[in-house]
Structures are given as C-alpha cells and as structure tokens.
Image 1 (cartoon, rainbow, N blue to C red):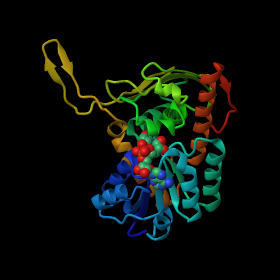
Image 2 (image 1 turned 45 degrees about the horizontal axis):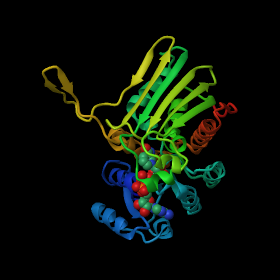
Image 3 (image 1 turned 90 degrees about the vertical axis):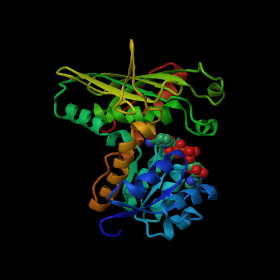
Image 4 (image 1 turned 90 degrees about the horizontal axis):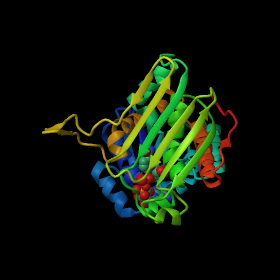
Amino acid sequence: MSAGRVRLGIAGLGRMGRVHAANAAGRCPSVELAAVFDPLAECAAEIAGRFGVPAAPSLEALLGEHGLDGVIIAAPTGEHAALSLQAIAAGCHVLCEKPISLEREPTLSVTEAAAKAKVKLQVGFNRRYDVANQAAAEARRSGELGEVYLFRSSQRDMSPPRPEFLSGSGGIFRDMGIHDFDAARFLVGEIIEVAAAGTVLSDPGFTAIGDYDTAVVTVRFANGALGLFDLTRVAGYGYDSTVEIMGAAGTVRVETPPLLNLEWRRPGAATRPLVSGYDQRYGAAFVAEVEAFAQAILEGSEPLATGADALRAFDLADAATRSALTGQPVRLGAGEA
Ligand SMILES: NC(=O)c1ccc[n+]([C@@H]2O[C@H](COP(=O)([O-])OP(=O)(O)OC[C@H]3O[C@@H](n4cnc5c(N)ncnc54)[C@H](O)[C@@H]3O)[C@@H](O)[C@H]2O)c1
C-alpha cells in the first residue's frame, strides 16, 4: 500500500482481465496496478507493456514478488477456486470474477478460507456497482415502490462467446443467469423457488455441450413476489441488460442506455446506436467495482458483493440448471435475507 493506494495484481488477461487491467491502471484513484500474470506469456507481455508494469512468470511470483495488497482473478471459471485459495493463503485480498466455481463445495471453501484468513473476498457481480441499479435498489429499500409484486430482467448477448469459453462456462444459468439471480436478490430480496426452461435453436453445438442458447427462469421471492428472467446468447441486435421492479406504489425500470446519446433521423425512421457488449453497458460499473474493492481494503469494510452472495447465487443458478433438466421447480431454504 502506498499513499492511500492499494497495489493490485491481475491473474488472467483475456476479455475480462483486460477490462480490469485498464481500469486498475488508470481509472481507479485508490488503485495502483502492480503486476499481471497470464500463462500465455505473449498475452502477459502485451498487457504488461501496454500499462508499463511487470509480467510475472507464475501465480506464485505474482503473489510473492510484487508487494500486492490484492489480486483480481479473471482466469477461466474452472481455475477460480484454486487461484483464489492460493491468493488467500498468500494473505492477498481477492476480487474473483463470477462464478467462484462450477461446484458448490469449492465456492464454500473459498468463502470460508477468506473469512478465516481475514482477507476481503469480493465477487464480480458488477451490476451492484452500476449507478442505475443502485438507485433502483434504494427505491425498493426506502419503501418508495411499496410492496414488490413483480421483478423482470432480460440479459441478452449479441452473439455467443468462443466455443472454448462456452464449454468451460458451466452453462447459461451458472455463467449468465448468476448475474440475474444476484441482481434479483440485491434489488428485491431472497429467492426461495426457481423453475427454468432452456432451448437450442441457433446452433446444435449448444446441445453437444449440454447447454442452451436461450432460456427463461421464473422465481418466487420470500415475500411472495414473482420474478421472470430471459437469457439468450444470440440476440443479434446488440447486448441488452434491463430490469424492472413493479411495486404497489411505483415501478422502476433500468434500461440499456444507447451507446451514444445520438439519434439519426430520416423520413419515417430514427435510429440510435446500440451497445454490443457488457463492457460497453457496464463500463462504469467495472471501474466502480475495482475502486470499491480498493476502498474495502483501505477501510476494512465489507464488499457489496460478498462470498456469501456468490454462494447463494450459485445455489440458485444450480437449481435453475436442475429445473431445466427435470421440468420441475426447485425449492430452496430461505438463505440469508
Ligand atoms: N462480470 C462479467 O460480466 C464477466 C464478463 C465476462 C467474463 N466474466 C468472467 O471472467 C472470467 C474470464 O472470462 P474471459 O471471458 O475473460 O475469458 P478468456 O478466455 O477471454 O480469458 C481467460 C484468460 O485466463 C488465462 N488463464 C488460463 N489459465 C489461467 C491460470 N491458471 N491463471 C491465470 N490465467 C489463466 C487465459 O490464458 C486467458 O488469457 C470467467 O470466469 C467469466 O465468467 C465475467
């Protein structure tokens, strides 16, 4: 730690690691990017060169040789738990991308290890750091919406990620839906029942890996309210992530803002440029989550997206996966409110 800034390293420098590297290097006032690591040496050298920091040759070197306060884990999901445990054992605070694991036990182990070692464990639920979602959460918490009756959320990717990513992603519910399960808990409250269905219409490759390209989930909240999510990898028109909370006294909606505040007008038609990826829609939230991680380290406060949140969202996503396979709804214990 130097002059009120925390020294962060990044492990994994693909799509998401590059977003975090750019934010940690230049957009977060409480962060100093100290070093990066990726087993693909060329990739590590490229990002290290871009931001003027050392490329560590191994995770051990990243954790042990750069005076890190914390590390951002943005490796493939299957690697998260082992890397997080290694970082925790080295005394580093951890910001781990979602989900922590594709299994429950490692998710729990990471959460427990962080608590035992008294290091911060923050999870990459970036929507919690989005100002519009925070305003919607506050509208519900303050009672402005009255009793919540209905929650609706859409999450649509423009086109699917690479097949190698998809095959290790854990499926549409654990990889994508986990954001909606967490957002629903953040915005409304605990979920106690999940039912889900999925389909494949765009490419039989999804079926070959036991996944879906499009899915719907219905949930029941502890207060009796209902929720509905739609998820797709193949929206085609752009990236879209919207939520709506309908309550007795008011309704709040968070829409996907256009890419630019600009509209082209021609006779009979007006067009606005659409966002094409999560990095564009949640660009500011990704900056805010890394800055918030640093603040949690500096102030000793609890992160807004904790290991316990990751565990509950995992259980819900897992329940959706089972429900889609069996056609039966899955009831869960009340969990943490
Ligand atoms: N929060 C979000 O909205 C969001 C968006 C996209 C991806 N993600 C998550 O981020 C993670 C990474 O996804 P991605 O799309 O960047 O994947 P990616 O395949 O583009 O990048 C992964 C990188 O990790 C590296 N890597 C592999 N093994 C490693 C190891 N043992 N240690 C360190 N690095 C290793 C790879 O070489 C690669 O460069 C996934 O868990 C994914 O779920 C989150």
